[in-house]
Each structure stands twice: as C-alpha cells, then as structure tokens.
Length: 194
Image 1 (cartoon, helix red, strand yellow):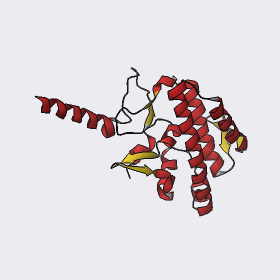
Image 2 (tube, one colour):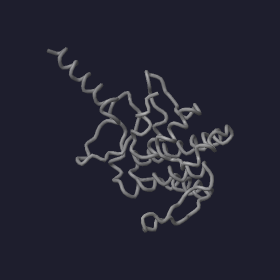
Image 3 (tube, rainbow, N blue to C red):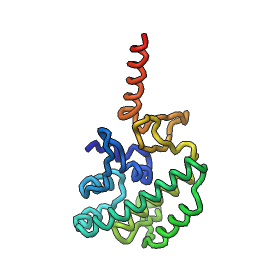
Image 4 (tube, helix red, strand yellow):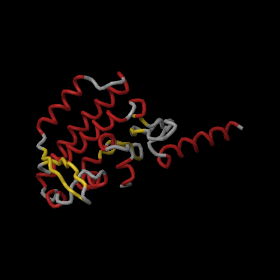
C-alpha cells in the first residue's frame, strides 16, 4: 500500500477521513486491516514511543479501530457541514464534546534546554490517538480558513486536504495521484480534437 496517501490531507483528522479512498475503481478502507491501521497511526505521528508495545495487544488495537471508525464518521459530518453550511453544526460540536469528555488526559511540564513546555497526553494509547486527532480538528478550525479545506477536484477522487499553498488555489489531493492524471487526460482530449 502506498503510504503517501496516509498524510495527503495535511492534518490528522482529514487524514482519518481519507482512510476511505478509491483505488483501482474500488473503495478501500485502510482501517479494515490492523497492519495498515497501525501504519496509518504511525505515519500521522499519533503515538508516543511507549505506545508501540501496547498496540501489540489485539484487543487494544481492535478497540482503537472501532473508536477510529466512529471518529471518522464524525469527521465526515464536520466536512459535510463545512461544505454545505460553511460552519460546523451544533450537532457535530456536541458529538465532539461527548468524545472529549470521555478522554482521560494528563498534563505535565517538561523542561528541555531550560525551556518549560506544558505537555498534554492521553492516559491510554486510545486516549492519546483520539486526543491528537481531536486536537487536529480544533487546530485546523481555529487556524485555517474553512474555504481552504477542500475535496480533490479529480472526478474519481474522494480525498480531502487542507490547502496550505500561498495562493490558496490548490486543486488536487496530490499532483502525483490526481493532478497529473487530470492534466494528461485533458492534454490527450485536446490532441484528439485536433
């Protein structure tokens, strides 16, 4: 599996939505397989170093996959709200609040190079992963104009991304995956007309 698809969205919550994608005209769910789920979690830097050992527990990874499926549904609702209403609905906000209320998070202070840094992390691996994804939702919505959260313009693509380009005119989830295909198709269509 091409790991580049794991981080195309530019932020963990959109990357979670992108765990459902189209490959060879078939829908693929990265979260349906434990190995690819673990790979996706690692590629999105959602774990602490100590968490890798815990994820060898089959019950834990199965529970985490269930939670990720649930959170992905909510992330899809948030994207739908943004596309249709230009804002996150009260329903989605309330669902997000319920998840946050269940999370157990510890706050500590680390000092590196004589600099104090407040660190928040989940008590369990599941809390840690969900905390990081929810944090990415909040960070994106606080710091990014909603019109820069987009769906890829390729007609066969269902992936989303945050447009961080200076011009704000990014059209594709990835130039390599969709942009080149679209441009090549347009080129050959023009050539055929001549």
